[in-house]
Image 1 (cartoon, rainbow, N blue to C red):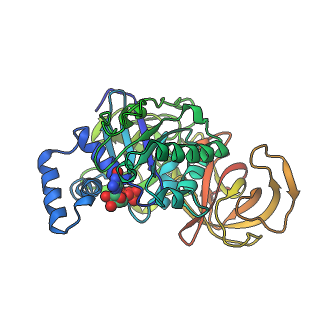
Image 2 (cartoon, rainbow, N blue to C red; image 1 turned 135 degrees about the vertical axis):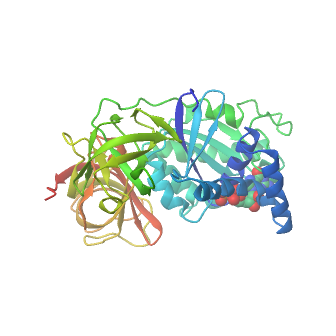
Image 3 (cartoon, rainbow, N blue to C red; image 1 turned 90 degrees about the vertical axis):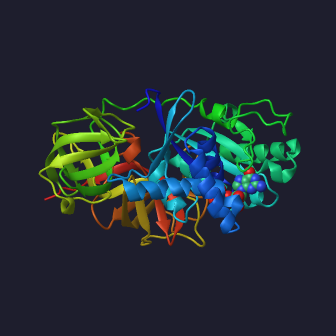
Length: 431
Ligand code: GDP
């Protein structure tokens, strides 16, 4: 495995703005895809009359192959830049992307936002229901503080500096409003399709003197890793592997896991012993925050565990709750939200129905100051403190203790309704 520092990257942006194309092409230019495989994909694309999709297909192909060939599929792609070893969280571009972004984004250290400059596409992305807007909101709520912006499809706008400046100004305004320090964010004009400014300076845009996309990714910084905190590993999947046994898979959020440790899984309250730990198919003796791992646990069967459970050490088990207070921002709702509304809570890898038990107050999103006590309802754009009741006990933590397990999204019928953080919680004793 690479000795370079490691970062988890999520790619965000409106559908069809070129996330898959840009990443597929970038992976190719970085030497992750061999010529033969590319030619194979090109042939296939030509046959189907869909040559413009070849770069996006590279990502799909990667995913498929892993699903077919390997026992432990972490559903991640990796690539290296000069400075870093990146894990690309979730292959973007498929239908469930926004849903995956919620669970994926809570694991990301940094984000690449792809915005199409093409006439009409940029405008659709930043409209009230646009995903450019939605994803920026989510990224911030999920604690992703570092962003690079790729302004894509510059070939479609005649490589125009004016259009670049227009899109940059609009996105800057949005980012600033949501709380990002815009001065530090690189805005790179690219063509994900043709390859301009991905790893080599484009001859088509001599007016641009900033970094290429890959240079911009190297301006990210490694966030401090919370190794001194109690252990928390939200489980993404559980496998039974022949000759090995039960292997939960997840990312260490806080603390350190060592071979030989006793671990407890909550809410099921099952205890086992760690026999081995693997990351990217290499055995390791200990795992630290940021590591995506599969770990073999003795004394537990696959049927005991499920996605959304959280592993910790028995002397400081993950907190299970059946009630909590969340501070939320309503990103989208067609009418108004009142007490009794029961959408779905997404927190780390868990999903569970949750009831709006009480609207405690409407607040100012920037300062947190009270705007209205106990309002009858809240609407799109409002920030509020809500008492939530998950319909089943679920592991979560206060945002101030464990940011990684204290941020959540609320979804309903395939739309993200709200994003928020846990400010208070009521412990639930598992019998
Ligand atoms: P995603 O949904 O954001 O992952 O978008 P895709 O990568 O699937 O791209 C959507 C469409 O835009 C495809 O037809 C691509 O070929 C096209 N596309 C992506 N990047 C570019 C670009 O830089 N220039 C042009 N002209 N088309 C692009």
